[in-house]
Length: 527
Image (cartoon, rainbow, N blue to C red; front, side):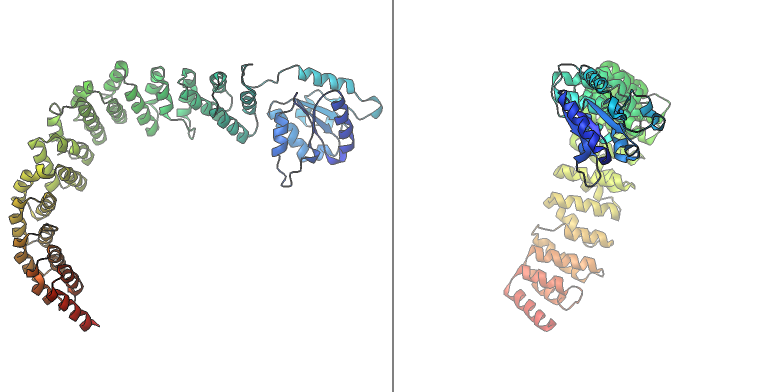
């Protein structure tokens, strides 16, 4: 049997003790709050006891009427759905709080005529009645679920949050019914959290609360929760495509694409022609999420959209659908157009697909984009794709290098250096004498880890380059190649204060006797 909670002040402890003994003598359990012992003034222990009580008997005397603790306890009980029985002990009815005056109270002020029988009758009546809650809890629900359901009616947000956290850890047939009731709770946060938990069970009863949550700020509701429910949530997700929140619209479109029924895809395709650019963009994102090859014709028709962001979304969706089809021939002309698009995200979207295709036209287009595009992001992604191609990109890179301006030639040499094809060594050697210092420097570094002896004369020549960073590169690569032919020129570099440290390191790497002696002499002289 749930206990009876007696709320009173220390000044009324004598009467409270009589009250407790009398109630206990009538076979009721009693919780007396006077010794709960919270030195920090918190009500945690009392809160738990109140929620688990059959009723709260509030002793109302002139002292208790001024007590913050007593006021808190009866208010907390009412907010938690626990019955409150006011017992007057010298307090006047007209002095009671308006909320207490609405309750049925008993006057125990006169010691000779105290209504004990009426009090016991009230307690027995409460004992025979199940406490009402906002939720209709199945009678076969375990006590832990019933307690959590009761706690959802607490006036304390923390209690409600703990109850929902507790429900999220449970697995009982009655749980879904309790959550279905909770999505109609008067408190929004309870509705939304219960709906999120119910969505995990793919229960359509969560849809109205989830849809409400998507309209609310800071609700914690995500379109993925509707997506979990599946086809039944399609109308709500389509409706969410009109929300002001961009994240909600894109999230709803993604979930619709993953549901991917013919009716859903047709609705998204229709929105590709909508007058609102954001609607077209979200529709394209949803179609990309579907990754269905049958969508390719509709996406090809939409790829020339006048709005950059829409065009990028369409092309990204096209890539996903073509990848799912495993055949890029149908979309290759669109890819070749896209790599030259004025909006960088359109070009970026197709760079990897062009590289994977291995098509000569595609590789040539990547080379053009990588070496000549004035949009840095495009050039960067194109060069990254070309690196993945490796030797397959060599012919197109060599052809482009022959006609490239200094900046493009610099990039071409860098990419060809990664391939390490001997056919490119003459190009690198010639480039070490190029008028542009960055080209000369890139050409020098192209011999890194190659051990190409024919490069040594031109590298030695560059030890006298007018640009310090070029001379520094030549010193480093000569040390990396490690040929003794470079020892004497490097010894001469020990006299150059700007190159001495690097030259000493290169000589140590070559490691001949002459090189070691020169380094030792240089160190002694430096000291």
